[in-house]
Image (cartoon, rainbow, N blue to C red; front, side):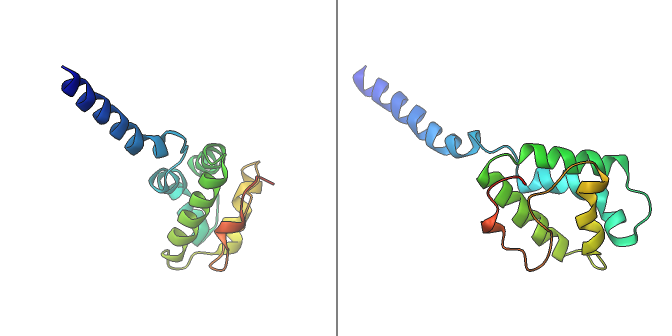
Length: 120
């Protein structure tokens, strides 16, 4: 009986170690990508900012409320932007203001995402 209890406790503790790092994360790269995908057309061609883009900008900023999340989102956005041919970084960086919010960083190939710890 004690052996079964020890195995059960070991499984529970092991599960907690695997799950724990993800419990505090509010945003993943996949979520940020999904939220910001509606902004790509504006970032490349300009024109009218789609409402789904503003929703995504605001929601991604809301979800990235820890240092780790902001840095992860920054790196994800930076890497994703680098893979979009014809992306206009000026337009991309105008989006938070157009959408009525602010971003703690500028999207650029040179952005050092490790420096972003707080929302400005």
